[in-house]
Length: 484
Image (cartoon, rainbow, N blue to C red; front, side, top):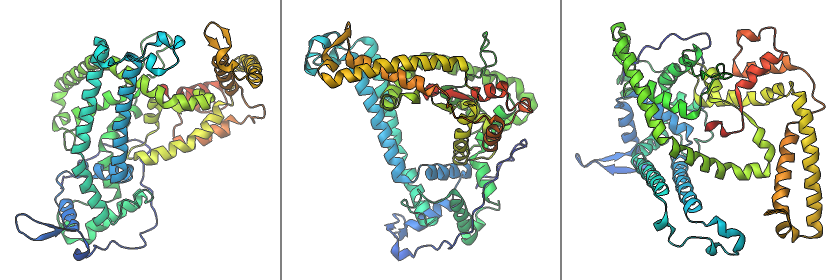
């Protein structure tokens, strides 16, 4: 097995894997007679799935990669959930591509007001009449979909091997993996290593819970260190934006590719050339070239990515926001704040759990600092829009035909204005603070800090001030479109 690479020394908060009670029962290999049998083509002997899974575990060549696959399998809730999720992602991608192409190139929108059937406004054989730009977009998206479909098929054998590892060695079938804890998975990995003579003697290296977590988090720990030490300057050198951190999901993916694949080799270990001071100028030049290359590539691909993301988010969130328009103003932590909150060796599912517990007190804390001018304007707009929406709703009770046929303005029916005023009313009502809110910002912010473990020095003695709330507000972004 791979020799473990020495981890860098990290700062104050080092995440410890929580302990759970010991297993109530030990792992006992199933009798060979009860396991599926396969004939070995070389020897002619029958080999059970348990023996094949054990052989792969004993002969793991890259322990870091293997443990990452174990964790990804656990996070995905088993083979069938992973396959179903990826299949549905492919279908979602195909739907977005196909439906967007239909909406952009196959519908004559100018004919809709004068037509009564869909067939009257749809271009027959529209694929042959697509513009050059639309055709180019379509070809690129189809190529992307085909590549994802091929990767889906190629990943099945490794998923099947991981299924056998969990099912036969760890004795965790697919139907149980959705409820079993990660601590149980770790304990059973330790158990098969210690109780089986082949795995116990295959490597002199120890393998405990901390080692497993360190190997899984080896690369992410370096990204966490970049944010923890404020090494990355991701501000924009423009007025009013110099102190604003701009870090989107797309930038996160680019940073991971440019830095992690450059610093670490294919085995997940730090490349030796980074340990020599004399190589620093060459490494800096190489990293600069990678950033320039990815910048140019993003400039080329950004129109296609933007079109896909806009269409995807529109299809995904329109119905949700239509039913609950106040969700437009909902808050979520920005990608930058998530990396600032991460701790070394903290696995993603533990971090998500910790962050989820902080949302409620964080929102209550920000609501402690209402913008009185904004609230006054919101009350006025809510009153006016609610009045119009109420009158239009009463109108439809007397004449349901007016909902579609009666025009308040040119091409503006009652239904259109009812939706417009109703949405405006819901959004502005969500901006009005609760009149019965108890002012206790210090208590709430300390509760937030308890979950996020983030307490900058400038907050000391200022938990009740607008300065602290502004910093906390900067860590959150409105709505879910921050993923763009």
